[in-house]
Length: 468
Image (cartoon, rainbow, N blue to C red; front, side):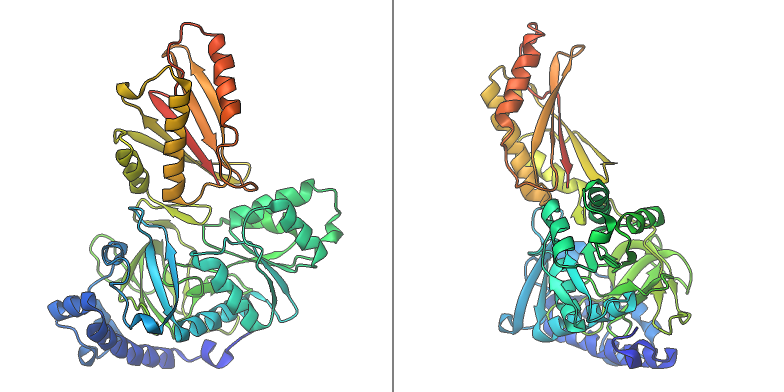
């Protein structure tokens, strides 16, 4: 099924001619409207009229996430604020988000791109789609929302969390499609298996999953548990989902090449690589008005296939991301950087000695941070320890933006005479320290068994565990 068949099945020569035309215009647009690009392009001696072929893109300097962060909030904006109708933002490495701004035309184009992906995945105007991405500054939910409406589907803006209510809406509203992260879809599937309702109570048939990696094994398990066909709605870094996405044949993610120009480079030499070669994905926006980006280094490792797909689409396909060139972690669809955690620790007076462990428990991501405490932080005053714990947890929650439920437990280490306090989060309740009293009582009960212990605190290593 196609949404814009004439565009999605263009001849390769026509695609490249359109890209060249748009690239020349975009270079001049950035040069004339964004001081950052004006300086960069001037130094490189690049203007639109000097772009003769698509290969000339190699002379345009790269753009990195650091460049966008350094120009926070609106230094990369290409038009007056009065022309901007929406602002989105994602996580950054210092607490300042990576900002994206959109004109009315940008929003309309975004919706069309999502409609394409939805149609390619098999969504029709008869579907009822439940969006279980978190709404807000995150681009995923609203991006999918307006695109699926444009396709004619009925959209339920469920947002994330409150799993039992999600399942109730599946049954009561006759939901046929789900938009979510793969890990949450897997969790929902486990909850469906445990529910007292028969499989016939659910009408799910299609899932558009994204914002984090999904292995074939995970996809198979989701399809088995939820009885639906699952596709990947693609990368979200360049303005939100819609850059690429799978068709029903699932043999690569189709790029919207009339709006984005992808390249593959060697991450070390920065030289361009040929079709089918593995390397770092670099993308140039060809249509964005509010915040265009030239040669953005995504840090994603993949390869691009330019052969037409058996589905009839002719736009290039990228493989699923094989890895990343940086240290960014994706925890439940949220970008998390070690430097974010370090920033919080240093701001709170902790040493820059910490260990991060990422694992999965019960189909949920768990991010564990072991933090070293200084001697002056030791105390036998339980309230002071609890206050310090809450302060650090709140700061990490504010920085990472992924804490949803907070609990805690303690572990006694007799060989070192200290406790480890473990804090975790889950899906279904708001953030808070509601368990703090119970934790204190547990510490006191445990300490009573070991009267030689003189300080009941989470030192020298305090463990904060986030499961989102």
